[in-house]
Amino acid sequence: MPSVSDEWVPPGIDNTKAHAARVYDYVLGGKDNYAVDREFAAKIMSAVPDYPVMAKANRAFLVRAVEHLAKAGIRQFIDLGTGIPTSPNTHEVARQHQPDARVLYVDNDPIVAVYSGALLATDDLVASLTCDIRDTDRIINDPATTRLIDFSEPVGVLAISVVQLIPDEAVPVALAAFRERMAPGSYLALTQPSSEGDPAVVAHVREVMKGGPIPISFRSQAHITTFFDGFELLDPGVVEVTKWPEPYLAEKTGMLQIGGVARRP
Ligand SMILES: C[S@@+](CC[C@H](N)C(=O)[O-])C[C@H]1O[C@@H](n2cnc3c(N)ncnc32)[C@H](O)[C@@H]1O
Image: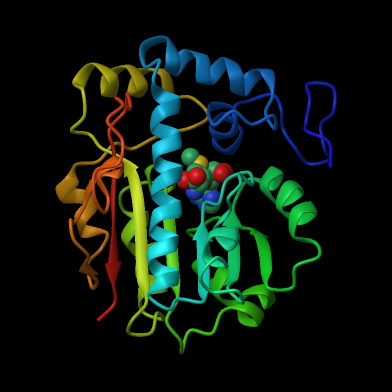
């Protein structure tokens, strides 16, 4: 599978406006993005040059959270808002501790399926679904989900840096649809940008994104904590991603990204 290039656009892919998955891929140092995505990232980085540090710290949180869940015995995962594959991916991390771990990847950007499909074609225990995370009925009833995910067993649901891209009222509804089905002992891991970071950074990113192709909702720690309703937050609660479960990065991250991991009692 070649990288996308400004000359090669897979069928069904729109390279005329920026997409979150490809902007994020660029910021992480990936090659699967277009000029429009790089220009969008440059606008953010003009005022937040260390934005890529945040993206990498967020990715490191995902790795740490999945390791934690796999060590706790979780063998099946739903990764909402997967992004373009970035090694190590959720199934690679989980399998270090649970060799038979099954993972359902869900992203609404068709480019994610183009890359995940190629990467996962030979792996029966992993599937990639192109779907909006708000379309919970479709996700839960899709044949790939019913094949891979057994809701009578504990499951790890990941919403890592995705819910900021859906409106306030939609987040609890989407999460509740999973929570209602998640067996006791299941986990939810979630991160998103905080509204309580550097006010100049928040104002700049809001301005760049206003009316653009990628709407974003910064939220307070108190608001983000409500997304874990019905779960018991693990220590240290909803904190800067670089501090979960303990501090591991002294570098400044530009944007304040916070999150936590919680268990369904
Ligand atoms: C910032 S990236 C995060 C990727 C990955 N979870 C991580 O943290 O490394 C956000 C991803 O969410 C996807 N996304 C945005 N809105 C979505 C929605 N409503 N439903 C499904 N996926 C969505 C984007 O396409 C993108 O791949």
